[in-house]
Image (cartoon, rainbow, N blue to C red; front, side, top):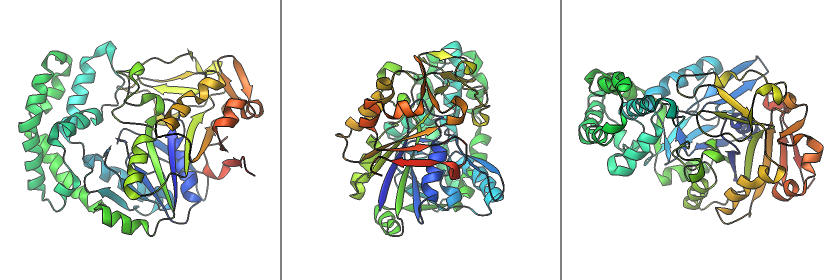
Length: 408
């Protein structure tokens, strides 16, 4: 079985959905693992035929249109409240619902996580962290405090029993968490604080979450190993980008609540006894950031190229507008990739670069020192030293992706 990690090289929004879709369509029997983050991701897949379509994936994998099963691994925090809407929207567009599996020890977000997240981010005013308001960090804090809600505890629950679990968390954990945060919450957050004491919120959520369990199959490790007997390509679809990794202390607090590179992938593969075959780092020909935090070399999009409207990253209350910048030098381009590879012991697998949005920059890389034609970029020593293979995309469609293997 081939194993491939798909990782965003920058701050997210690089084109990971396109990369996963392309890789999944090249495999007869793929499975895609969501291993970090949660429903805040928005990975876009577009098709030009048989009819033009566009779908933004949040919890289903971006390989779903290729009939790849989605696996939620421990470390991914799914939102059962939102799952049904995405699954049915997918069915309406593609005519089926893909297989959705969760490891037995995968923990879910609950409504209180989302409401606390929204209350905190609202209270920060101009000092917002750039959160999506989806409760991922709060879920991570709650889970690590010993109050995680695992799928093995949810199987077979009635709506009444689900309500009991949510109510218990509110009494045992949320009340204490709000006490810890009392000095950080402002009057602007009152609408969310009111909902945190509203019993109807939990009752309605319990009904929906219990119903949405029907889309799921919960797997033990032996169950997963049996399922993998029928998989020929295991693709890891990473949320966010390397520069938002939770351990990037220089960027704190404007980071995410997970590792966004190879470390969690290697841990999962070690449990399965499998090696990593290829790491695919995805980047636009320029840099984007959607949310608060520093962006070196930030500039207007018209200083980069003919940048098209990003329909997935429209301005919103939580993250504002999408922002743009040029890449640093070629050495700067590979720096974070090199660190990520070294974080798991060095390069004993193929490392690839998946470049997107080439059409917007005239097949050049937008660098701080000026535009660098693609051919020159590919022949730069640090680029050829780091990457073994290249994937090129000048459209949003997977059928237009071109691959160059250094060994060819």
